[in-house]
Image (tube, rainbow, N blue to C red):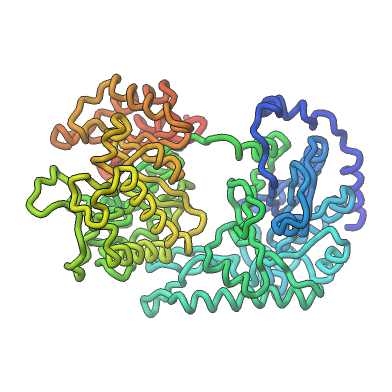
Length: 636
């Protein structure tokens, strides 16, 4: 083993640098001067390191070969990147020290023995610091115990020993972090038995038919974090300062429990740029797929690129069935279709709306105020995320809730006035309304894993509504009022699902006619500044207009006229013609419309609804247009 470690060092020192310089990066990404400045810190996350990548577990997509890791280290050095320690980052956050330009923090997860045998010698050769995250229960595993680690049957031999940890700590190059004591696993988190991350999920007791309460969840996490920090301090003489979240996911509730035991720095997985001088969790870039230097360059600079999104909006009412067997068949049909279609996101209905009036009379998750039609959203969202690889945004109303036991709530719309098909909407200035809707959103977040929120098209205020305290306000003020309310709802969700993205529907009319903001309290510039995406309903059918090329051309031009308008706006098409008895839009017309919008410069595209029961749009017809894959065609 000792000779192997010296061989690694020797290779590191002798590997030629030719082809790994800035000239090579120019070939990959264009001249460096063409890029905006990199963020002040780049954090790379590695896992297992193997001399032969074929020796890794069959499901281990995060393993990297030794020669590729050496190439990464050489490429970073040759291209002016500077490795920094966690101490440097903490000092920079506190304003005591300035990070060098192109600063990089190296992190390695899971406490694997390959960090000691393969990585530690390289760190000493290059004098690179690193952060090493330890999962206590794996290190303390009794001899003879084995479990599945990414497709490999792993026992005690897969992980470092405490003697090795102490040796690395003494080098001054490696700082130890907590990866929790025993939370790097899944626990049953819904009635259907789905295993979800233990650090993020309320445990479901199938025998009692109930969820863990929030107090018990906090106590469980606090106990685990304390045990991990105490053990690392006992074994090394140094209390860890950082927690590295299992699977890269966390919430603010867990973060507070970690900070309470001294783990005040937390690190996640995300492609967002770290922000110095804040107490936010530090996002890291996951190195996977045995990346070479081309892939590493793309990973680092991909943060500066707007990735086109392809979205399918799905009615959960189509999955629900009173017969559990049929419901599972419906779910299987949806999963198979989305897997084969390969969009980047699914916007999944979280409320029940069988009569199609857009009002939430019930929901698909446990909550305090509305009937639960079925505890289904968690199941479907998790299956979509894990089986098809898409991001799932929960599609929810903002004002259109009908609470059965709260009849005294203030509503919008004037009694007796013609509402022209308006949604039933509650008044957002009513304190009881804000409280109840906020609690419903929070209940959604505590019970379901989700990647974001889609605020539905019921979020509007007419200038002809009964405006209460907003009487005399301007259209701009009403627009901001609703934005602030959705931010309040987002904050409730982010306590539990901190990494979520947000999108909000906007009608086409206020985009084409800015003066129509008075009729909607909606504004494209304001929405693009407030949300990750504005979901523009590019549906002339809603205004009883023909779907002409000229209408779509004017819509794209109006969006493009806004700063970063095409970067932030998703064009969502209708698959049903509501003007014509809900007649399905032909597949050829839908595909032609998507290609037309792309030719006009549109980057983000989606459609609603996807009827996976009847198969409209036809899978093979729509896949080339909505797939996020590089080759969106069936392999033959």
